[in-house]
Image (tube, rainbow, N blue to C red; front, side, top):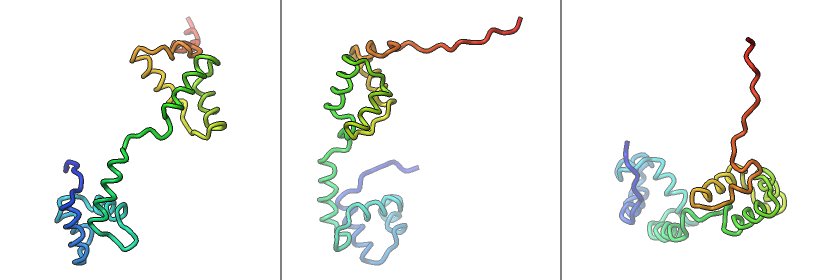
Length: 148
């Protein structure tokens, strides 16, 4: 299995030349040492209105890298503060918070994400877990006694 590597400017130049020569995506991938899927994704992501051009593709890819891959889209700082405030003051459950965020704020955030936020806060010394209704305790179901 090959290891992942990013497509470089030189790869894009070769991809452009091989594409102009009429090679297939599989042949291009084999020549560059990358998979056919990577070639397909590169052509789809970085092609402009006049087709794939390597300089334009490089600028587009660099702009995408500069933008950041792991910027929070849903769980922003503002949403985190809102969740903490609702937990502390109104003692809402994560399920209620998830529903409220979806209906009032338009943020579709699973209650599981909210629980993960709470447990991550606890690991860093926070106190959000104390405002859960069961305060982090596990629920023990009643068991039927074995017939003696």
